[in-house]
Amino acid sequence: MTAAWAALVHTIDEYTKDLCCRNWLHEAWLLLDEHIVQLWTLRIEALDDRYRASTVDDDGQALAHFHRLPGPDLWWWRRHPRILTGSLGRSLTSVGAVGIDADAT
Image (tube, rainbow, N blue to C red; front, side):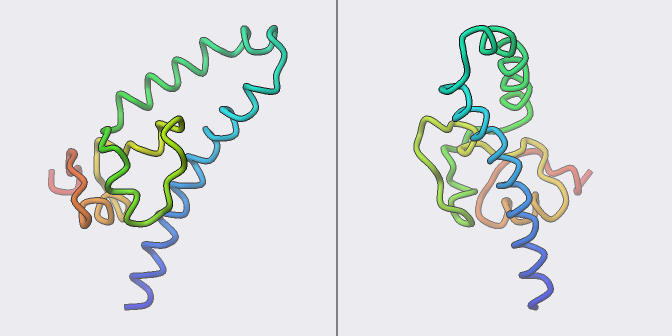
């Protein structure tokens, strides 16, 4: 039982660490000069679009069961993967996340 819990915590921790990378970009954007922002805006927007396409907006309901959510301006925290696979998918599904269950196909 403790091994299952440890696996869940590790999985959620890894996912939230990845989301924190986007937090860093959000925070850095405010500090960068205009030239750098212009150079990177299209790339960041394209990545954001890809993230939106591969995730479901559930207003953070699933992830909030495992992690305290930051403010609403950090929209990426209010989404979860569209394809629910592996231990992250099982964890999110267990708290009501709806998506495509790749493990069942």
